[in-house]
Length: 298
Image (cartoon, rainbow, N blue to C red):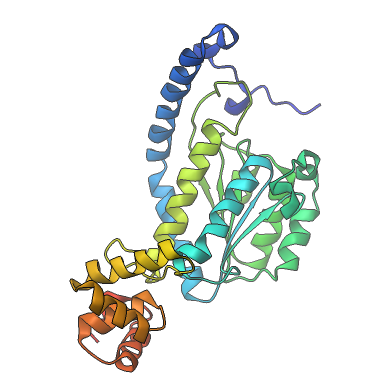
């Protein structure tokens, strides 16, 4: 029998012993109070998050990828972050990859037993052609998921950087990784239900890693997502607004620049800021590796 007694994620929360006797408002209130503890827990691991961001940024600059591995809620968090990157930052779906025990179908239908496999994590990494340029990030509340543990072992043999996001100290996953990000959020409101505070902490850290890494490779100008893909009316309007805000121009000029740039927001902004033709703006961006600020000084 697996021993879970010493895991913080499996311990009972003294503040919610009478959860089954609480009113809906009391339950909502205590959950809100407990969620407040997540912010403090994540704050304590910001140096480790920053280290992971540096590795991920380096991977992306060198043609590598960010690869998340997890099971259950943790795997879904990784998949969720990965699938949001292409529309937000204009990257290929192959740049940030989410792997979940049981395959992508496990995102919508629980496949809890899949996490115990010692071979499928390795197989999944082999299937996507893991290389030393990639950064692998394992995600699990417990920090003991075999699917991830053995995936990390293989990743280290491949020569890539490895990190984990776990909610217990000194876990098997942490022992296998180069870097451990351990936001200790304390016992869950509902004992062992790590989709709650642990899931929230994981989502916060993943938001930081993917967003900061993308900023690092030029996917933002000021605080604007300038590589957003304008695939619907809302995003087309957002693209126009971003050109207007970044270049301090009117809507008509923004629309003309976007038309010349074939919808490429970053290119349109660069054109207006440099007061140049679209081909010259493109050349400046290329010389600046896609960073608008650097392109303005080329």
